[in-house]
Image 1: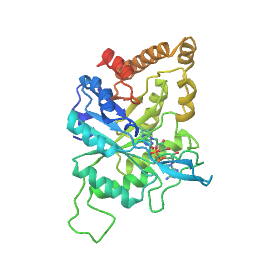
Image 2 (image 1 turned 135 degrees about the vertical axis):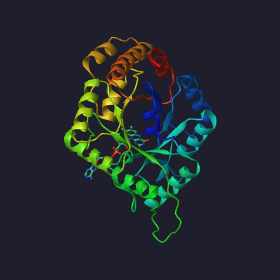
Image 3 (image 1 turned 45 degrees about the vertical axis):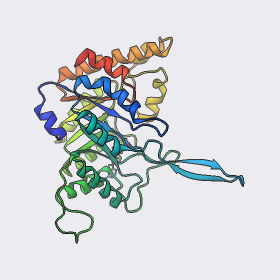
Image 4 (image 1 turned 180 degrees about the horizontal axis):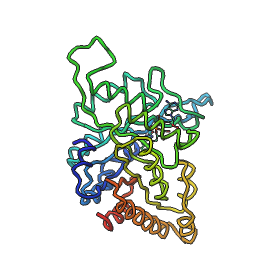
Length: 317
Ligand code: FAD
């Protein structure tokens, strides 16, 4: 079923989560062990992230370094198929522009269509680690907007090879990313939202936000979006803090602010067990307020660890 249908049919706030494909030295059983305890809260959909290649340097016998591309977390499409088989819920594969030609993207979308997958979250992706800025693949999509246009074309039966006849019309529901605290490359939030509006005009059906720890940021973002005429659902994404290190790592990676009430509590923690508890309590308070405000769904970035998300879900769903 499409995410928009799940949202429309919902009688109360939905619970959903995002998972990462396992690392190469982990097994899919480990991922299942993380998802299994969350299934009792009936997520109608589970997002599966996509991780582009990174470059590692290996020393050869002649002493020279060889640059080798490595994909540390392969398997997004396979994990989606496994989620359908095991849990009978809708997987939402993330599709990124980076590292793909349009033709490779088309092939991936054909695979997803054959698997009966009806939802995709369309993203630009980030720069390759250690590269200064995002570079699209030659013959690839440069912005999420271009990717939306490609998938929307396939939904109309328009494929890259215009001479093809009897082309299947895919039936994807399109999700996109939104940033309550602005995407880090955008000069200001207003312009970032104008670009988001273009994604909506191109066919996006719903938005999932970057994580945030201050609900006011989400409320203001939604208000600004509505003022711009963006009427589609905006699903808040929440991440429970699990270590005191998150105080430095999360702002660095995700370009967000942490409220001082939260950092004060984390500073008092003697170990990560206490930090985890602070993270759970903060996320419960955030979730309660968002539910009261009327969000259609709460989407949790579980990052491969179910303990905190389960505690939050036990308190709310
Ligand atoms: P875009 O919407 O293309 O925007 C990128 C930047 O360009 C923004 O600053 C925007 O303001 C600007 N912009 C947009 N259009 C134009 C234009 N026409 N001209 C000039 N500027 C423009 N990354 C992964 O690699 N894998 C994942 O699985 C993944 N999942 C994510 C899930 C969510 C919910 C979120 C919020 C992010 C996720 N990301 C993921 C990270 C995402 O790929 C990065 O944040 C990336 O830098 C931007 O992606 P986007 O789709 O928002 O880009």
